[in-house]
Image (cartoon, rainbow, N blue to C red; front, side, top):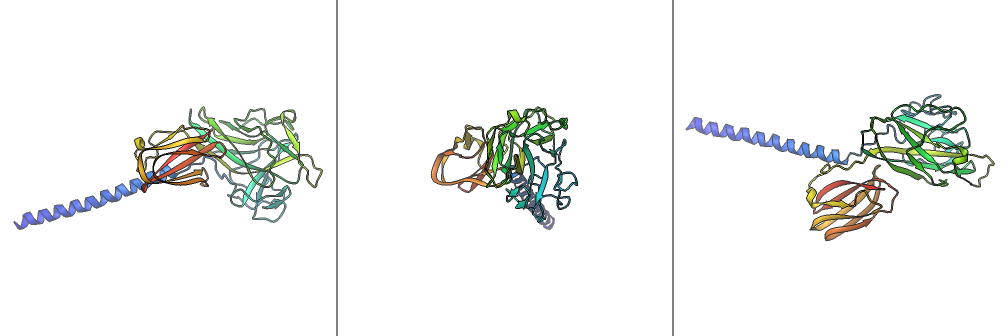
Length: 333
């Protein structure tokens, strides 16, 4: 009887311990799934130019001397690196090209987009692109307020090898997959350039600048206090995110058959269908750098129609229904 009692107690202790470990394992697994779903993996290394090799000197060049981690100037140009760590001509917000705070952080880069004698910035991204995957690409540019020209054709060329440099002063002989055909003339704020790129697989280099000749570049005159003819742009927050939609990839508590976002991709008009009524529903839409673009609270609803008045790109929709949460990818084209 004593041995039987001891055996039962040992078994109870064993299973109690096992239940504890199983519970902890499930908690850790759920946490890992949550972190994975929230991860917005930007393949661009040093996307906002914050990581420095050393504070830029008066020359400010991206590569001579090297001062900005991961980025460099290709071809024959002299693109520049700006950082608030210095108060000289390549400081932030005041520098030789004008006055501009960073879109985020304390640093950004800059390049000449017009006239002939183009400047570019280039980087080898963190990993090669996957074939047939859809990637959401975006970056922010601001026109300097010293020169007196604004242009269109600010774009990005994505390639699997380093592009062959042009013969000075010609632009690169490549067609950028992401290109803004509108003239960007805002000198006070930042303008987002964005687009969707479907990879053929193996791409790992990005080059940013104006890939078009002077004759094929639209310009407008911007009156400033100097007579210097040219267009120079600051650039910040470059991102490339895999926005291929995969069924079930973000299931965090609301079953997939209980939640739908349609159409997806869309033009900014879409609906969130919960398929059953919830007492309380919260919606938050953020961009790929975590900024909130839209927030909404509803009660006793199962269908929400929304309009996202934001530029094309990848967004994340967080749905909290009766304290159950799920994060979905949303692509605006």
